[in-house]
Image (cartoon, rainbow, N blue to C red; front, side):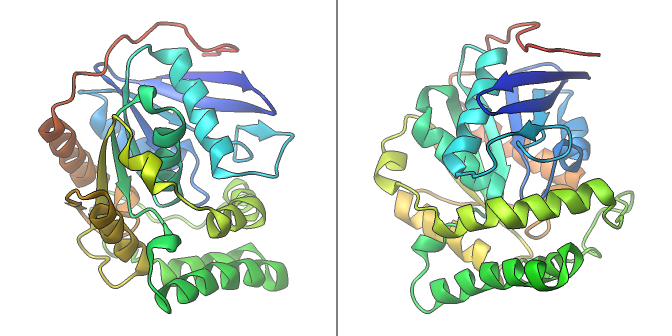
Length: 287
């Protein structure tokens, strides 16, 4: 595995590349940094060149422009991809990461071959009063953070996202968030959650993208509104959604099964074959 840092406008992005094969970028949700995707990446590295990264403002990635939009995050991924490949890549994003992956597909369609968007919180698609309730869930997490701190706010998130730590593979450890993760939660609630609440996905542009777009849902998350959003996204795009192991955080708690299912979904899409990986394309690389 190679660790590198890429200088982009207003930020430095720490990222990791491992494995061989077509390029696949994993975009974590919530306050997740590259370590959240580490197990999933490990299970995919025998078939893909896997790119993981810390979003700007999280862990090893810095930013001096914290007033974020999802377009900012999408442009960051675009620059990472440009440093590594000249061809369309595979993209897998979950939750906030799924929203970023969809925005990437709109803003930089030539860089995306297949995008799997797992339970993107596209609240605009929800009918009332479901939409109002979803927005209230996000606001309640922000308010809990301001009044009580990061840990109570994280509990709010876990509740409306239906996070079940018992729904996991036997070798997956559930750890309490350390200082770095709590700082990531603070950044998420201060900057990223407001961006989620106000973001409007351009469905017309998304439909016109040359990329293959695959909405994904968790097999155990049908009771939460992000699952409903994913199904409505599939309906709006006139495509099928695919079911993945576990719940909203299945990629974290069931990484082995998620890797196999993701490989199956990507293989079924049979795109033109992302390739063209360049070696040493990232600036500021360190081993």
